[in-house]
Image 1 (cartoon, rainbow, N blue to C red):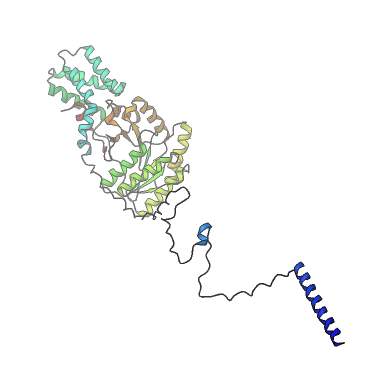
Image 2 (image 1 turned 90 degrees about the vertical axis):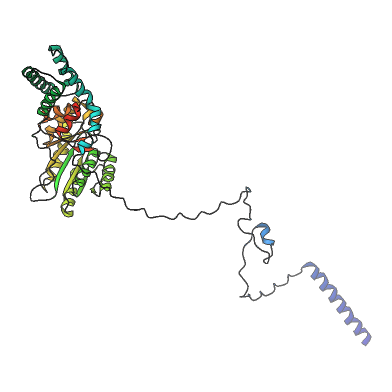
Length: 403
């Protein structure tokens, strides 16, 4: 009996073992993942790697950026350090050349351009016989030099009468006669001082007008140098707001001699700029305010409205002491047309003739004074900063006819 029971138990165990093997071969369960290891807080954080770099052991020395080739095989450009910005030195203030005797110093330059007129007249007057044909040639010479019809007639009549009375015509006598008659035409008794020192108030106010292209803004800058050379402090008003470069140009001139420039937005109101310039001049205690205006001559009405407004607004502070008209001497009779237009718009008190060294038509001095009834006060004799000179009739005539 016991043998039978033992046999049955063994059979059951064998069958159970066989069943477990069959089931295990059909479905093998995955083992659970091992628990994560505790992080080592002393180890450095993992770094990402790309491509082959991922297999490089950590203890292998790393390559520098200079040793790593770029995809195209070129080495990387060196990283430039930002440039060191150096502070620019302040604009050096120039000391303008003294104005006293400036025209005399520039006389050689004036003589080169005007000598043709003087020599031509003296040559004609030195002829043995001064007949009607010779006097006509003298008239033509004067007219060609833009002296003007009426002044030419006066000069020729005066010379004829004096030569007839004197009877002798040595070269020295003829030169003396011509000098006297030219001085009489130009005028030695006119007040040619630029008014910048009004009695009982500061600053003096000077408005500069003229057609663009005559050197108006440059002349305003040079006039600032003349005034600074004579010991004045100057404020510049850039009221030519319609020309983009005008304000920059004027400011550059001012910075060179320490003059302060008041400017407004491009295309802004010129009268507003002029008003602010005079206001600044008063607050700063400056001696003179120079106002550069626009010179557009598209219509007389537009010009009149604009300049008239500038004048009215400025005179809310104080009356204008000078209105200087800048004319290009090389334009000759066309300059007289411009002069007439401006004279109808504003009360011109003085004339500045620019580029007088670039023309042989020095007679424009006589013609423009006769046309406007106001004196030439300043003349420009070159491109240099100090080539603007107070007009001196004697030095001018001596340059015309030579020694």
